[in-house]
Image (cartoon, helix red, strand yellow):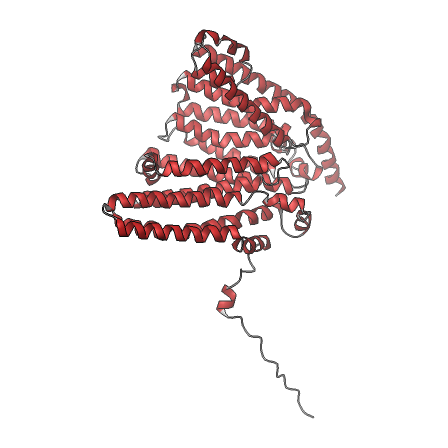
Length: 493
């Protein structure tokens, strides 16, 4: 009886080159899909090759015709940053327009959610794909900047640091555009990014070839305590804004049973507490500190005050299990604009405490009026919307529309006041109930004192705060019913 000999050959191991030619299986399927499509996209290929060709041509021309190496080096630096800025701050981010909306419109987002891909993985896949392509452009730019070192008179660390900050700005802008790409309003989703891109095409060359560019390089070098803290706090705020924008996109495409609000609010609370803790020890001027606080507070206010009120028992259940303290925390952390308003008021209080420690009392009265008017301008649209909650389908779109309308009205009033003599501007006193009128009355001479103007703006802001608080407390009464349903689910299980 003959033995059966297994002659099957062992499976061949894939070659290293074959394994490097494709993406790893450990990567998210959404990221792999977007990277494959993005790297083959004509927009990326054209931008990448054109940038390489232009920079090579400029560098060779400068080397051949440089009579003054110092001047040639400065010109090369400006050209490198201009091309890089246009590529990663304008062209790359606008590729994210409609990134999520296309999935929603094509009815493929439900299929993705049914798989193991969470809403965050879907959004991160879209964002990382574009950022990875921007990183390739960044890697291709660095050798040109290092070659520029041989022309002399170069702040190597400052320019490399500024290059990294520009790339960070690209990631944040991309996150914002991807995050709002599923907003129903085509004006907000498409027109606003295009207008911002047109402004960038005008501003970037102007900034690179003016004297402010040297100041940016000096700031990026972080050679003084003020510049160090400015860069650190700026990077911290940029990371927060980018993460928040991506969270907005994830929350919009996620099922209603997923709670993305609590984590976002806890992170915002932690960041604000950190700013309160360091507000008294930093060497940042008070005006700069107010800007840092505004960068954290404004996105939080806009998102929390416009979040749709959709609260389900599974969302309340983790809070209900913690007893009375959990229910109290839920009043600030549950999804929906009523709880978002309560949380926003806490953030406003912490922001005021931080500005107090930073020395806001030393600011001129006009500066304090501007800060108060800005806060009131953010609260007023939300206060108006709170009376028509049941009739509003897309709160964020309507809020931004009202905010834009207020900005247009402010510009029209500023032009009108500028054309009138000083003794004919008294009608602005009747518009003191509009917080944005404070921006105008601060910059043009009026018959009332700066202190009176600050008091009027504070009263208007406080009035809108009270309206928001009362309407939010009325709306939170329905939360108790949902919590009872969550308790019944816990008992039945």
